Length: 474
Image (cartoon, rainbow, N blue to C red; front, side, top):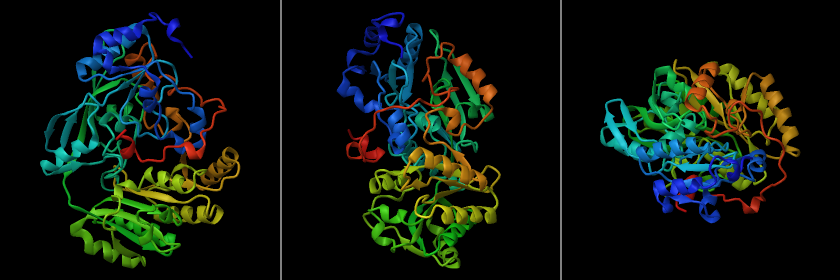
């Protein structure tokens, strides 16, 4: 790990204080500690690997000009720099691996332009504020994270992949990010604009390829939604319902399937889910309520309105499910996978096989989405419970699933390529070299093998089990 004294100037923090003001450069341990946590503790492996993360300081620019000046200064001193939004990531995307500075971009926020089908924003803009502005114009975001209340625009596209709306419009790679502008990490930063397929070069790249300064997202016509629970006695029927829901004319912004006993772990709504029942969390257009009930009836499902006064439905799907499962089973883990796309029968075969082999261990949680070509895509984010020897058991489980044709992503790694990189590796690396010639932008996350073993483990009782929205109030 590089130390301050080994760098070009030992007093580099004074330069940042002169640039931004001393109150915008945090170096005292208590003040920066919250910037050294995210939701990578969902993984026992990452929790160990990132236990000793530290930085020299956190800097907080308040405009694009200040952000550009910060980047230029970091390049001049060759100091490692890691960009951070709300810190809602699950893989340590914004936790630095080398001593340096973290740049909090939340102060660089605002909506630049909004027109039919498009909104342009600054990197630190909270997704909820973008959605609110779009709604005022009769539109909504095509896709946004389940943590949209606190997540930032640049954090979402750098560390996320899909979320609310993906059931109807696909993920980030489905032309939902129309363009980005970024600056290079040089002493005199340049601005580069990416459009079309070139945008893919920075999606889900953990902020390793350029510093984003402008993000242009796709908007679609606004719908009025209602939340429902649809319960089933049989998980195969639950899966058939979810598939047909997304493949129908019913407009659903969310179709999240939760195999028992996951529903019982979601304490704010568990009283509405019968013992042993499986549940689909559905957020769909109110005008399609009758069609939803008719489809549920086909698969022996029972539609129930969302419990009055309960936590909003968006606080349960995607990675929120892992939060609820870890609250219920603190020693549990999780996995990410993709079942057969566009092949319903093969998908059901895979679901059935996993249930038979890992009943009560691999708790299937499936987000039903679409692909750009309109096929049904089933993304698994399952809690894993009762794994006696976690790493060895995980290897065996992964091998079994791969044998079934289930694609596995690794949520237990902070390395981009192991966490689901989608794109042209050669072009991405060429862009990385161009925009970060000194290799100081979030180093260690790209093009390296995974970590060596660590000794420190955080006890379950010491974990902060609050949701991202709750942590943002600190």
